[in-house]
Image 1 (cartoon, one colour):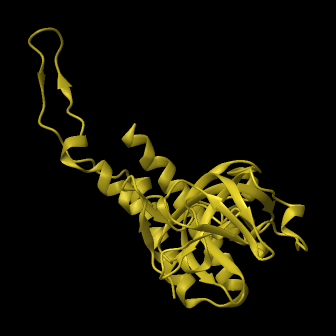
Image 2: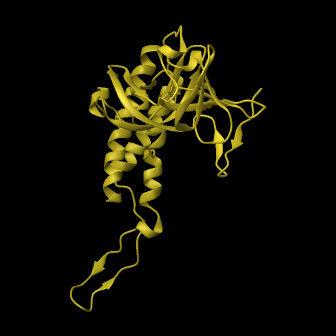
Image 3: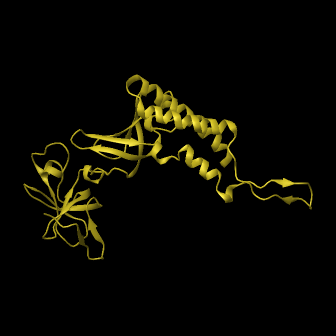
Length: 256
C-alpha cells in the first residue's frame, strides 16, 4: 500500500507522475538513490532505469549523473519511488466512459481512425462516430497528424480497446435548431431607410418547408433504423447520416 502525496520542504505536494530532474547520489545492486530536492529519500529500482532489462545499474547511471525521473509511487514511510521510464499520460484505471480526451490521429483506415491519447493503446473513432452527417471516408474529415477531441464511449482493458466518439462533442441538428431560435439570436428586420428607419420586433425563426420535411424524414429514418436489422439497418443508418448532414448544413447557415 502507498500514500498519494508527500510534502517537500518548500511546501510542494509530491504526487504520482510528477516530473523532476535529479542527480544520482548513490548506486546499489538494487538501483539508484536520486536527489530531487524534496528532502526525502528518492530511489529508482533497477527495473525502472529503462524499458530494456538491466544487468548492472552502472550500465545506465553513475554517481553524479543528472537524470530525468517521474514519481512512480510514495511508500507509507514517505519514500519516493521514481522511474526513468516516462509514464503514460492515461493509465487504464484513469480512462472513464464519458470523459473528453484529445490526441493526434496516427492511423486512418476505411472504417475509422486511431487516435493517440497517451494511453497504452490508441483509441478508435469508428466512421459512424466521426460526425452526425454522412461521410464516405474518414479522410473527408481528418488526416494523419491532425489533433482531435473525442469522448470515451467504451473501454476494455481485457480486450485492450478504447472506443471514442467525435460526434458526441458536436451539437445534433435538433440542438442547432434550438440555438437558431434563441431569442437573443433572432434577427430583427428593418423597415424603411435612413434615420427614421425602425427595427421590427424580432421574429422567431420558422423552419423552411424543406427543413421541416428534412426533420420529418430524419425522424422516420431513425425510427426505421431502430426497427431494422442486417443490411436493411445498414441502409437505414446511411440514410440517417445523409439527412443529418443536409439538415445540419442548412441550419448552420442561420448561426453565421
